[in-house]
Length: 251
Image (cartoon, rainbow, N blue to C red; front, side, top):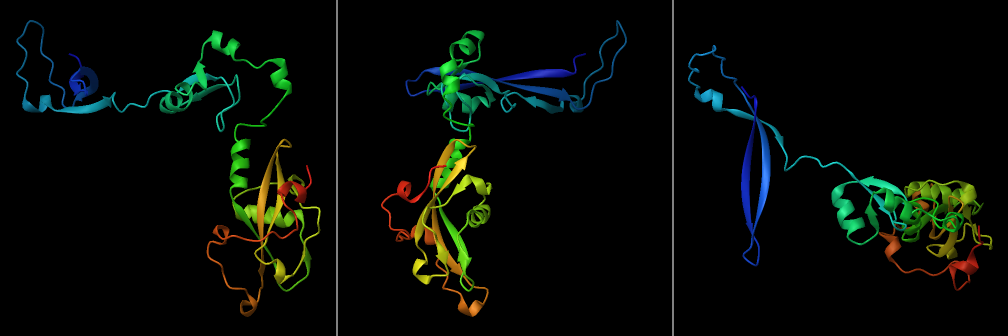
């Protein structure tokens, strides 16, 4: 006697043009109480109501589909570079890669067709699939650089490193290039003014990071008023330059 029973349900969907499309959904069921066996050449025993109680084993409609493998035709941010074979969820592959024409199905022909040439390998534009996304995120924020209001200081790369860590970014000091002009304080005339520095990612990509200077005192009575959502407010440049490129050094 079969233990598993496949029950097929047919659903008819009506489109705007009154056409009907058949959709098949399969449920794999299992008897909760198995009927007793009968002897050969004897009449089978009558099945009771409990023998028609089934438990769901698998619903193919909600079954997790396996990942699809495709070959990228070009660089895709957060996915990979040209010629890479990636394995991702089918929904993402169909909507974000195949339909826009950014990838092709994984076949020996497509792997050979979209493989990088020697010239493309030598001219590296992206160090990783997520490097450009990191650049975009760094250039979209206004980094608050908190400096001491009571003790003298000179801005150094480790100040930017510590401020980036508070914002959720981790980098080394040698990846940060400060402006040529020396920034020192405390100086309340520089409060809430902007300056730019360069953050180098994987020794290749460079992000222009906008920083805003704030003074902070350990004495609560000497602290400046808190500015809510300061990054939405307009500010004056800290250094007398017209563009970030003139203010910073190239790494």
